[in-house]
Length: 103
Image (cartoon, rainbow, N blue to C red; front, side):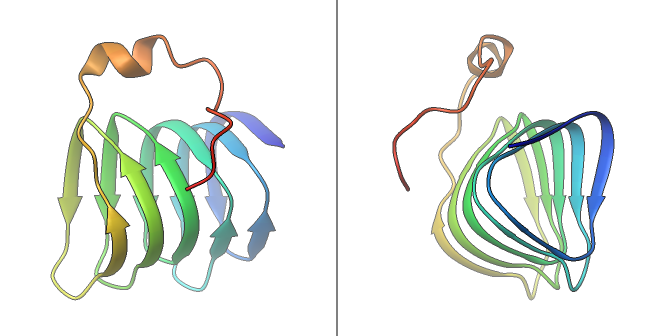
């Protein structure tokens, strides 16, 4: 598990769980695993789940998975295969670790 109490930008490949204050998957970056953060920006590729109150999906994003969010923006041109379940903000205030179920 990769943990950071700051903004973390992924420009390469990460396989596994990530917890950060803010996570950015840059264009060309790839994450395979689950993410917990206060804010997530996806401009690269993701296969897994996101648990974040605020999520931005950029036009260069390729996503296969689920994004649990309170607020989300999806740019035209983004590729998304999965679900985007809305959750109340209180869900994220009590989320201190990732659920163990698979996508």
